[in-house]
Image 1 (tube, one colour):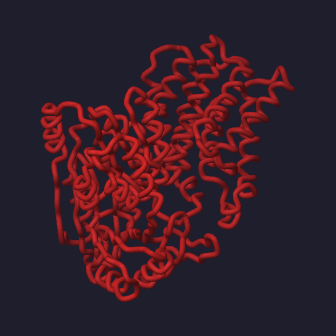
Image 2: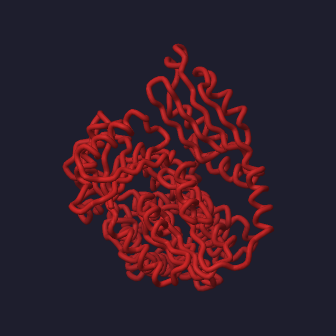
Image 3: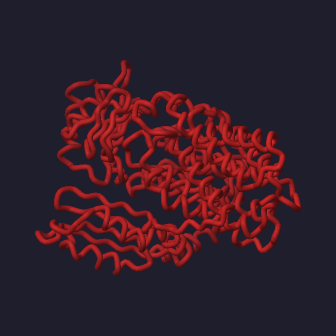
Length: 537
């Protein structure tokens, strides 16, 4: 094949989507840190699905137009750093096609080179040993292959692209010591190779069948988001003796994920706590009740809540100087941010990275001179920045908050009476001077930066570093506190998660007060994933 046809190009996109779905968990497993998060495989898969969905809306036979539709869908659906970079790769790719009527091997090679160029420019501080390295090296060497083999076919080009991408991926541990220590290759690069392998199979005429049993998750999520918003369903289930024998957390998660989105399942001995947004709460309850009896149950109609929001928006007040947007999950945290003058909450965080479009939709509702965004997670900052760039007609400042605690202290420093520059300066200073920590659980056995970690251990994390790991939560909490407290510190804030226990909160607070001359402030954040969030300032 010397000319790429529209039919084959659409087939390439479908194959790549299927390949990502099939290898989603494998890509997730390449993540270095053993924390439950918005894993790379999940983010890249959901991002690519959104791109393919948008490309299917294009009725033109022009590959340029289809690639442009793909790019727009990826841009708006981008989740996590890997999703944003993927969207930029294919933004460059469509730009590189230059509205050519016939897509030859040389044009394809140039387009992927352009994808590398655009994705590098999108990242403020590019890091080698990542997906960026894989796209740069593979596109360059595949382009050189085309230059030296002027009669090569499209099949041969993709074979070389995949070969070079795999070589680059295999070398990522040599460029990033942490990957080498943990014994994995870069997860984002692995995802990109997965996409390229889908392309190669398509140009060879090979269809990749979907084997992932969770492949309907995104379809269910899209349906919940579009069909009257569904029901927020929460319950605590006590396992019966029979239920204990048959209960498997992963199986329950798999089944519930087919009913909706925003799923959180936490198991603690014989108690199972579930949160899910679904159109069919009865099905979710019936599914869970096979394992035991409900201890607590709450179902809220989100469509009614949405109607109330719409009614409120009709009464929108005149333009105001400032509007604040924050990302968080948990009723307590949402209240805390709203008490600090945050107008719009983007639901999400760890395990639930919001998309670029989630930010764009929030921004569209705002009528203010200056908009401040607090992503509160390092894996969400790029999506927020991308939304800022899309909404270039508004004055938007994205504060690179990597934790909820940084977001809260920034909002606390906000003064609605101060001018724009003073507010930016004061909020950034507050972010720079706070020390934050978090306690979560390990999802696998590993060794990171010399710390041995066993699956289901409690882990104390300060900044980007795992400080301690142990099966006893209070042991972890005390060691994390000790590592965080600094000279001249005055205030210790403890934010309790949805699964925090009152006795543990008391024990941690007493330890801090007995050991250090600090005021302790306790907030009930109700956040998932993190048992506790700590802050010292």
